[in-house]
Length: 170
Image 1: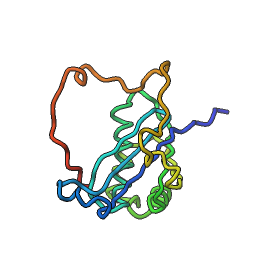
Image 2: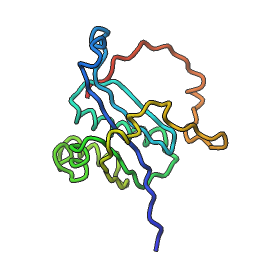
Image 3: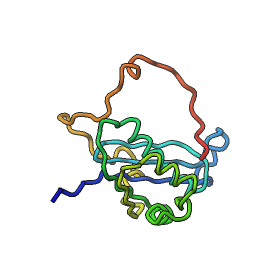
């Protein structure tokens, strides 16, 4: 018998609190935030976005899939366990209902990204959701660890100063 595939564990999350920091609106920034973290690989991502909480969570999920597909193409990922603190997302993706029902925009995009990837979802309490933690709470990577992300020659040679991005619309 073959050995069971050990999934990569990833955490996704989203927050949308317009009343927490009202100065964001004055600066023209979005209130929402999409996040994902893959602690085993030392990856944490955050980006401002504007949408309701479920759409932000879906945006975090697809950001994770795109990151894994584009930035880690040499890493063979057969199984992915996505942990979320939003029950609506966990149940809709796990049961392929709601936004992930058959013949919806999200289900087509999901089929495009992961034709051969085994995805499972799991609910995790917000206090245990690793993407909601500040970066200082992550353990440092040992010196002997070989990084999975290596910059390309283009990444090393190009240097551009970009204005602060206001966020994305989901």
